[in-house]
Amino acid sequence: MGIEKPKYRRLMKLEAIRGLSALYVFIHHYVHGNPELAFMKKFFIFGQFALMIFFVLSGFVIYYATVYRKPNMGFGEFLFRRFRRIFPALIVVLLLTYVFRCFTSMQLLDFHFLEFLGNLVQLQDKNPASWFDPYWQNAPLWSLAYEWWFYMFFFAIWRLTRNRPAQQKYIVMGISLFGFLSYWFYPNQFSLFLSYFILWWAGLELAREWTETGKISLLKQFPMWGSILGMTIVWGVPAYLAYHNQLYDVLTQFPFQQADVMAWLKEEDSLVLAYFPFVQPRHFLTVFLVLIGGYIWYKLRWFMFDRLLSPFIILAPISYVVYIFHYPVIYLARVQRPFGNVWLDLLWVIPTVFVISWLVEQPFQKWVVSWLKWKGKK
Image 1 (cartoon, rainbow, N blue to C red):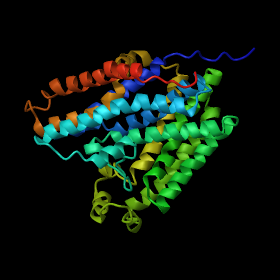
Image 2: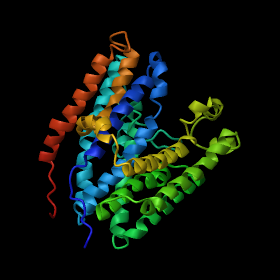
Image 3: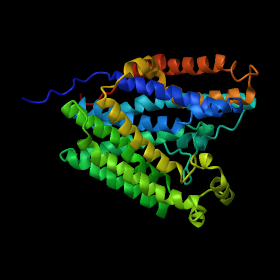
Image 4: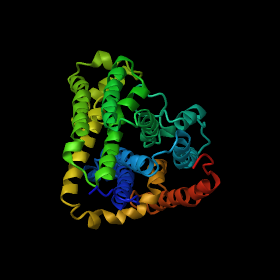
């Protein structure tokens, strides 16, 4: 008797996690962007944790919505659907980012057209050797570039090795290691995309096993999870050496000021982890812990999940724009302080973020979908 595969449906648990993660990042930036809320920082120290959850969820959803739902999808259709989902809202948010920065400065600022284009082609990041900064310091945009290139890497590997699916994870492991090594020999943004790809693919492997068997097993996932732990150690070696000032000569070869390097290395332990080269092992370790923690919760039959997280499903449909748009609004509130109080400003910050996110994600995006239709082969 064969194994009955799960029917394709909207996965509400993933939707709840997505909504919560977007809200958490929003609150995290508001708390950390306002000195008056310093006493709350200890409750919102997992902003990077939430971002890594997005990577894993994305890998799961792309496999589930592409390979499982429509296994014969060609690259043209895949690219079209990803473009339609990501870029219309992104263009609106980039323009809004500029508008809000002008409001913040109370003057017409330079548009930074080259940086705008760099963000449109998804080459932005906050790390040394990045080619473009997030547009007008809209910090969360850095992870969107990773997401986009993960989509491209995924489709190439899937199509080229579709008859050898068991080998795909090992190819990804090699790509991730190559990304790390090439970054240290020749610092560049693309190497970071390659190295981080394994984190996204971990979500894909979860989706692959779940759609094939209806369950998740530690045995099947161990190669991928073990490799992520291994990459944590690999990235941790230069971080350890840098912390002990043994990599100063190497670090100063990257395209940022030597004074910045020394400042980062001399900061308190709790702060130094937020910068290169310390943030990379944090990211990899975070995903490893997310996977282990998620598996334990899964074995506990998602005990209390619905009671704790199901309310956040309501935010899932607008979570993408909430994530990429909230930062300029928070920055405006911090600089201008229209109501003169960090708590009172929430009365306009929250509605502004949620209402504009809804307008972009719902009526606008629905109009885009109705206007941009795939006309290729069905």
